Image (cartoon, rainbow, N blue to C red; front, side, top):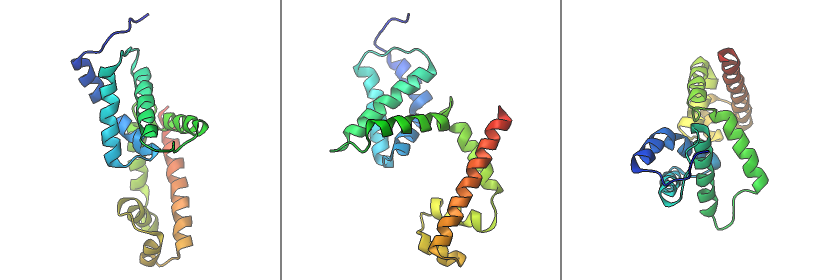
Length: 172
């Protein structure tokens, strides 16, 4: 059994390099703004210096860091944004997305799937997710109604999800 000890500054730096991006993505996934996520990531890693920490494995460390980050996120509200059951569901969904690499492989697959889109689908995704345009604005530019944009984006998300899942099963 590993002995509980205070972690060294060099070890903290290595853990930050290994897990910082995943913790930040997780906080954004929970709904934190980019600025709040930046602050909470710092607090999360400072917690390594404040309390004894047992470095068991990369997966266990990632789970511990997500728990600390989630607790800091929940504490940032006057009223908790989620019930415990919702947090459990969110954690399970995150684990499905992030896998062992913090989500890097899923993002690579997503980029590949996005490259396969063309026409209105590509334009709608770019305007909605990159340019943050409203459905009304997207609809006006594409010559369809707001409900049409909503349906188009829903279909594109389903296509992208299937593409990513296909990549997972083919890569396994």
